[in-house]
Image: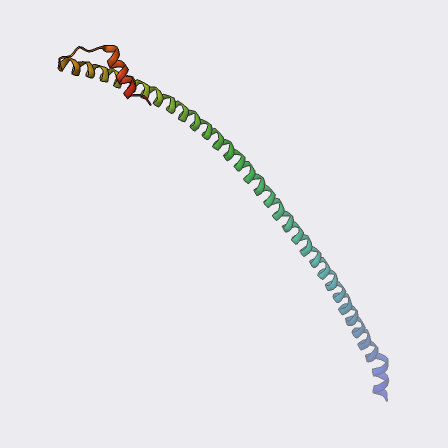
Length: 140
C-alpha cells in the first residue's frame, strides 16, 4: 500500500508529465514536418514552373535566332542570284558580240577564199555575187 501511494503520488504524475511532454513534442514535430513537406511541394512547383518558363524562353530565343538567320540567308541568296543573273546577262552579251565578230570574220574569209578560188580557176570574180552567195550560205 505504501508503495502504491508513493507511486501514485510521486512517480506516476512525473511519468505522466514526461509522456505528455513527449506526446506534445511528437505532435509539434509532426506538424513541423507537414509544414516543411508543404513548403517542399511549393518549392518543387515553383522550380518546375521556373524550369518550364526558362525552356519556353529558350525556345522563343532559338526561334527568333533561326528567323533572323533565315532572313539573312534569304537576303544573301537573293543578292547572289541577282549578281549571277547580271553576270549571266553580261556573259550572254559578250558571247553574242564574239559570235557576231566571228561570223563577220568567217564571211570575210569566205569572200576572200571564194574570190581566190574563182581567180585560180581563171574566172573573173564579181565581188557582189560572191558576197551574196556567202551571205546566203551563212544565214541563220
